[in-house]
Image (cartoon, rainbow, N blue to C red):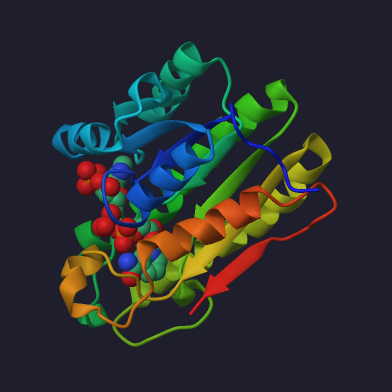
Length: 231
Ligand code: NAP
């Protein structure tokens, strides 16, 4: 039987635009309370104005690369909603260039945002969900976590890493009622990677990726669905 999620609370990172914003909308439409996370407060204010759901949406400015900020995020979210049943790790960055053109700062930004920050978020979620008797985590990886392309070395490394992290935590979380899964989209119509969405005409719509997330979240207890790959 499909899970009923109304009344549960989800933290969604990278919520201010693109795929994250579509996930926020889909969760709110299902009756899920949402804690929307991004760094830029202006983007979060615009999200709140657009969604118009009052107290069911809490926007928190947080740089998820900072472990202490992530711990504070969970405290703020729990103070508001009592418990967190769902975490969607969606925030990510991408630069695409020949390897000789990467400096250490670019490499750090990709690995810290796409991999280390997901680790911080999962760690905080596990602490919280073990106390609460379970929960669900969905990590947004990428098709480039399954295949590779030239000029995507750092991005591929980060997303292949996310899939390894997801699988390890799926096994670790299972005895505690914590389900961990991934959604891997191909090119999606957002401004990601510095390329405007208007130049990605044939690509996936952000709403399609959000539907895959809610599909995973609503699977019954008997389903061991762990990866959705969208091409
Ligand atoms: P996007 O439109 O560029 O949005 C990225 C979001 O992440 C923004 O809300 C941004 O807000 C937030 N963010 C970035 N760094 C952050 C940090 N350190 N802490 C907190 N929030 C942060 O990207 P998107 O296209 O929606 O991509 C979402 C996810 O899908 C990413 O993981 C990406 O790798 C993956 N993906 C995208 C595509 C694609 O073609 N679009 C394809 C495959 C996979 P602030 O800048 O305000 O922090």
